[in-house]
Length: 351
Image: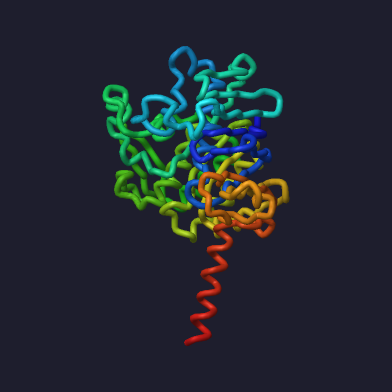
């Protein structure tokens, strides 16, 4: 099952004056681009929260409150609202094209739940913060003291700690081999602690491994646990963080293989190189869709002219989607890359 669309009105960065922010997704890999503060992570967490509410086992008081996916320090969803008038409505809606899940922050209720609960949309969210090196006793302490980590950070430790699947499809075994080669071993968990078992027999504590390799190790463990299979959804916030650029092609190739196996993928990134590799290495155009989020005033949004207003209150979040990076006008990561190239050319000319 794939997520087809999302609507957001007056939640976090999405302070819309006229109508709800709306974004349509492809069934393959969706790459969210944009500067800081335009809502990329918020969208990922909304999708993840909706998938968690589709599973009956998480219902009846076991479901995390929406605010828990953002911070354990927030007491209620009122702090996530973003509007200036009391009568303004605040909600987000996630849809698979046939069913929808609507969470109203202003009316403090979940609507359309009868058609959503029971869809059992399996998903995995990989947060920007690396968590496995903090796993020793983490879950027990969090249950007792409510540690200052959001729900996505807790869930990733839970998912990585699950027992390994007995059998995996042949292509998954090949993916694991690629990752094992990069990290020079495999990942095991003993007494709440994660280790990388190196090919030479050494057992390296996860916290002592390079952080970029820890990301690959986490991906290895999620696949080995059988959490990424046909029909599931993978949400990954900034895969490039602390990852050496030479490993970008490997990560892209793996995610493209997962997509071909029927896994829908959502990525938020600031890396031009990572985003471009998807465009270059995909096997078909519709396999990857780029979504550029940007802040603009309503009167110039259609002309792709972000930041052309002196009135901050009129700024809203807009988006444009395309199969190619070059088609996304106003794309900040492309503009930053172009600026660097221009500076390098000028520097060389002066020298």
